[in-house]
Amino acid sequence: MDGVHAVTIDAPRPVHAATPSFAAVAEELLDDVYGYLLYLTKNRAVAEDLTGETFEAAFKKWRRFDPGRGTPRAWLLAIARSTALDWFRADARRRKREERAEAAGRRDESSSFGEGFSPELAESLRSLSAGEREVVALRIVLDLDGEEAARLLGISPTAVSTRLSRALSKLEERMRDHDVVA
Amino acid sequence: MTSSPELIHELRASRPSAPAELRARVREIEAEQPARARWASWRFPVRRGMLVAVPAAATLAFASAGVLGLARSDVAPQTYRQNALGKATAESAPLTGSGGVVPAPSRTQGSALDQSTDRAQRVSATLTVEVSDSDAVSRAAQDALDLTRSLGGYVVSSSVSTGEEGSASLTVRVPVTKVQEAITGLSGLGRIVSQQVTIDDLQETLDQLEKREATVRSQIARIRARLESETLDPQTEAVLRARVQTLRSELTELRTGISSTEAEARMSTIQLAVVTPGAFGAVAPPSRIDRTIDEALNVLAWEGVVALGLLIVLAPFAFVAFAAWLGRRLYRRREEERLLAT
Image (cartoon, rainbow over all chains, first blue to last red; front, side, top):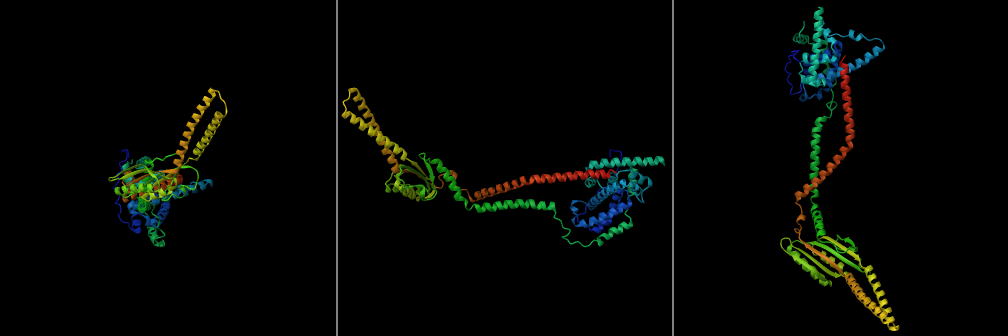
């Protein structure tokens, strides 16, 4: 954080020793998965769809989940990330098609974080890249520790820290701009 | 103005909650999905499988080496002793002559000695027999001497040492016509360890000697006739008489040579070594455990060779697969970064 952002990270949640039931895990972690996907896609409708897809995929793979190798949350977020990346790929292809048909621009109109976000925060979050929103969601909103987030993103903990610091600086700057305008 | 702690607080305060509809939909997933058979969702656990397969393969390799080593150690002693003793006797009993060496591992000579030929041949045999102990060495040596004499032969040299590791070394000569019988008899003194028969052809040498003898005789006859029939001057007569003298000396040498060669062709030389199992330090047979370990190590070495061969064959494929996997991973990583940069 370079001393700029005093981010307080809670201790990671305890790892379940035995495999809990899928229903209990889904109930407990639904908000986390949804929040993560909402930050990643900045679109409530898309986040809802992807959350549903994530839990369907997770249910199919549930027998293979090994509590010894990670928490259910990390496992679910990994599935959510894979689902989201598939969506991003499909979205990129769709945008290319739209650009060819000169129909670009509709995507931004459909962006919405939904309720709970102040207009300034939602606007500022929209200005971040998906990767920056993702690290904010994982480290700040979902309280994943650096190691866990790094494992999920496939990068080093230092890279996670750097990316978070940059995202927060950017977000802070945007929020400051809104304050000045207000 | 918004500071970072405030921003973080706001971010956490605005933590999204899943809509009730979504929550209901997720709750229904478990009920909607058809019950999957346990085997349908089963996948081979590669990492766990490797954790079991690698030690299992190693155990199997060692176990098979141990079993094969144990099985082979049953037949090993004879081979060990035969090889070691054979080497030792070959070193200690040099062959005579320069002719062909005929190893004769069997107890009987078979076709190694062709007694039907009329050619003059020098026959030499080297024989090593193993007897049980030092007393048996003395008995065997005596039996060998008796056999030699009974076949019309004689002893050239004899050396018998007794003690913990007794041994005997005998050189005997027997008529060539009896050599087959002699070797068979000597082989029966103990367990045959090594046996070699050397045959040198002497006929050519003998022919040359006889031809030269005839020539010398003829020259002597001609000179004598000349001395008797012609009237020669004293100087010529003296020269011819000196020549006859020289030819007579040569003739004598030739006769000696012919006799010696014929004698050599009449009698064969047999070198006999009688040993006890402990006579050669190096040939003490290894214990069953040692043999088992040796054989097991041999099997392991072969398994290693096979494994190495497979590794060499499969390594290029594994390398290509690894490179493809790495390339795909790098590509996906960059693609993800590109997608998430928007």
